[in-house]
Length: 110
Image (tube, rainbow, N blue to C red; front, side, top):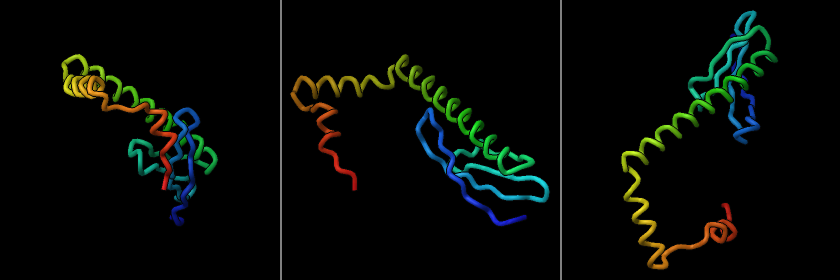
């Protein structure tokens, strides 16, 4: 096997960039995205491998998003988030809040 190369793969819908690890293995190419363990594949060429990784990454991100949304809806239904809503309402009544837009305008990344 050849040495592992890293390649950035950008998902345009989620606007996220992930690093893929790819390498030639005999006649084929192997690839994976360590941050998304479900995304692994093998292809006959580097180009096909990168296209396949990009497609599988997008599918995995959609799957994760759908699972998160289902979990959130379930949490709301059974009241797991009620304490947060009550706390937010209390802070609002007490004037202990600030506009999110104002917060982000004053935020300076380090």
